[in-house]
Length: 306
Image (cartoon, rainbow, N blue to C red; front, side):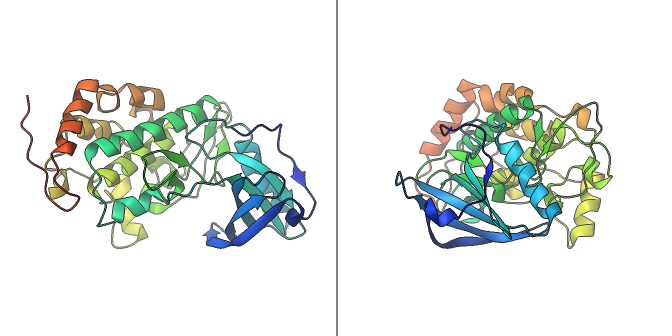
């Protein structure tokens, strides 16, 4: 974590403190528009990222300030850290640690990059550890998806969860309902406008795990309505060819998350204890399998159970 006290909004010109490079990509989600820039702090030379969010109305500013409040409560290696925040008449700028390895989603769909099951274990364990910290701090992410998980670099499997724009501070006694999110990753309780909880994030983790292992989305329909209906019916399986060599532990892990009744799903702590994430013998087996893959494009030598 960066060495700073509680971040407040500074109504000053950001260029006084940071040099902004041309924007890396645009933001466009749930009515929030803006850009993300790579930037350098003038005083220290530290490379950071500046998330410039359009916030003209008081309501828009309050939404961004909620994101700041959430991030001020989070201090974990697998959660992107807030460095500073600045407010102008029409924008709020969040200065964040810079993470340059690209989206986890890009690795999933990259035909030149073969994700092995052991890689999935490494990714999912880190996501679980980040979620465990968030949930200990009574914060729900509520928009967990591969696009919101960044790789620290292109040569490691270290990741960070990003984008807390839809996150909420959770008070169990004050029942919370939400009506936002990305269709393929929505939990049934969100679609039904029922109460959400920590395990709402765990459903999304189940979808992400399925995708990392197969490159497929378990509930994707021809349109959003069909996708939502598939989720409510909990219609999914492991019948695709991509799961032929997937371990029974991985399948069990997913099966304990993609459950309609949220109270029956694993929480983050329980998920971290699951054999798929904790069994060193299994991990050795998966490592052996990985090393027997002759190249990224070749098939793996079939493994026999010992």
